[in-house]
Length: 193
Ligand SMILES: [Zn+2]
Image 1: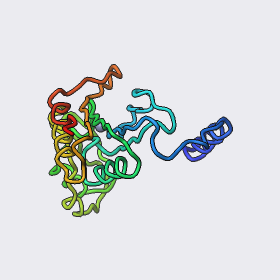
Image 2: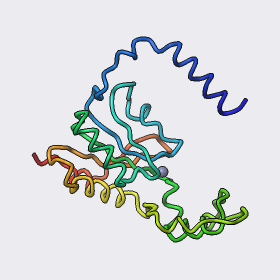
Image 3: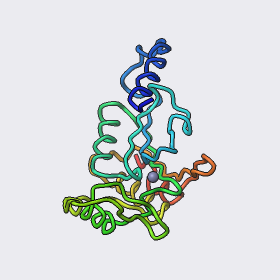
Image 4: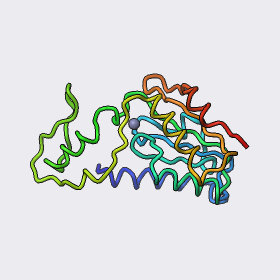
């Protein structure tokens, strides 16, 4: 069975049991948003107890406060009324295993999928690659607590983010499923109005 047919079959079952979810309001009912990593092991609906309609979940590689993540967060409060945000990075994040320099080198040599070895990612595929990677800030991570604090601090300092928004910083442990607070991040993220 292909991925496409698996997904469509699963969706058929989901839609059959959709019930009254078609009546949900557009603004998130519980008034909060989560910014987290796209890692396949993280399921915010499960680890944070979300149902459809509850909260915004914004995901990218690393759960980083990129300009585009901030774009979504601003829409989240300005148009849809969220008041509290979580920034959640996680243990064993793929973003810890490379740097901008490494990513640019890999993509410059090949567009095939690289392999993760003892010394990090390396290319096994054919060229050509592309030098376009040098124009992207890959927002890699070298220390999870530091990256959470950096992102919460950036969000709180953003001129389009009002002081009344509280931002909480957490690390999700992929071995246990547990969230652990990053106190420096939460301190930086406290609502001040
Ligand atoms: Zn990750």
